[in-house]
Length: 137
Image (cartoon, rainbow, N blue to C red; front, side, top):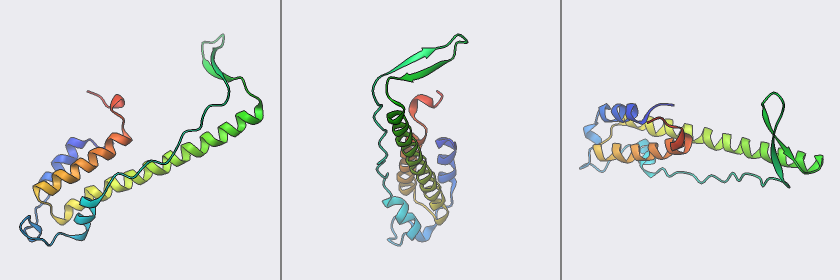
């Protein structure tokens, strides 16, 4: 994952096009779209676990989950879980594409305030894709 600091430098060093300055209302269409972008709602809902489960450790030391439900219920849960994982993957793929679109909007020329707004939106995406507890330092 590309670090936000490197992207900040890239965006701030991007050429600022005088034709699209703060005093000129003609902002490129791609920059307008980037400024109007909002984080889409994640409609993926994880399935509720069926019945009771317990963690079991075997003789070799590996741990696995055992469910106190019939096989049909467990298979239904596993299908729901697979659908949820695919939904999450599609959502994250969309965010990665949106991240690239926001990053690429810098090529059309940004003012400093526009760059800060877009960087804030990119940071929102990064926080969703890489939760805080997994990022070092």
